[in-house]
Length: 456
Ligand SMILES: [Zn+2]
Ligand SMILES: [Zn+2]
Image 1 (cartoon, protein in one colour):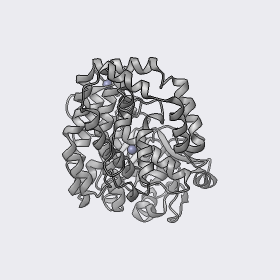
Image 2 (cartoon, rainbow, N blue to C red; image 1 turned 60 degrees about the horizontal axis):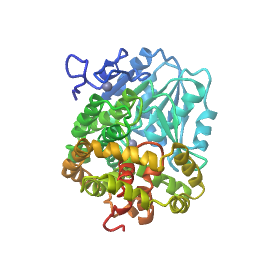
Image 3 (cartoon, rainbow, N blue to C red; image 1 turned 90 degrees about the vertical axis):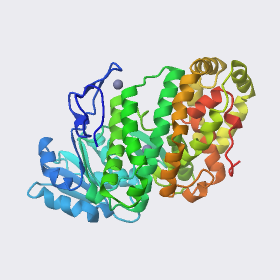
Image 4 (tube, rainbow, N blue to C red; image 1 turned 45 degrees about the vertical axis):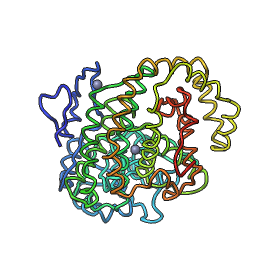
């Protein structure tokens, strides 16, 4: 689809967005998506693989193919490589590969140092494993996608589970992304649900990015935010067509998911792609791994975070904050009780999180007062930014319902208890330094008053 972005004479396609010279933006920066330099999304684009490899000067790729991916298009990829030499590593169908040390070791074992690119065929896990191997071998990576299931294709990090702990490892983003929508439209139904779920998160990410800018002064770019919303709107209004696997709708969702990574590269941070709902998802994943359970699909969890957010936002926006209210909220905060609850919820991982919050001074009266004063001063703009999510609630809810995403009071459908869901929400601000809507609620003294019907 055509996208509007500053410094482009006319609407651009997603492939135009990765032009090497970038885009000069009114925010004062030049936005580039390097090292991503070969991108194709659409029906039948698989056949472009040889010319894309040529354009990057790749002579001998190391192919990492997921078990199911071999049937989806792996065999076609091998055929398309023709006379070009390659080394092949195939991962088993079942159990499904995980983004952990075991599978990284497996693909590392088969690696041949005479290869000049790590080329994955698969979706999230394969892409993340390849990014890790690319980082370790200092080689560029590429991915031939098989499912529009998450927004990590173009991101510059790998979502890993190392020593049983969920960890984001910074890597380069892939140099090559090829998504043939005739392949992706036949992905498992859960992958489609997950992809739509990950896109639904963008309403909140964009709103909370602006909100955080207004409270903490962090960098924000309205043009990138607008670009992300163009892609998101196109996906969310097409939920039924996605469910029916119609190629144009699958294409716009795949583009949206890739664009999410491009927008994050443009911004230099993952703000355009994640906020409260991703923190909730991240915490749920931590709980699953700590309990030796398998987390649900990333996009389904992010969408569950959206469901919680949609219950929470009206409560956050219900009243205009005052200095007295914010001060009273801080007086109710009992640091010892908070630390005790962190240990209950996070066990052995609590200490690192508590230390991080202390080092940052996140929970001191001084920083709380500064942030809440900024929030009070900018409240009309904050309410407007977050209110945009509330204004889209019917569209978001309709799309999530059509793809049977669990409601806020149904965490067990994703394998989580009610307590874990509540912990993921109330402790979402304790995960990292990023300022999100639950951080705002804490600053305004109302986080502990937020309620979820059916959960508490
Ligand atoms: Zn900008
Ligand atoms: Zn995501």
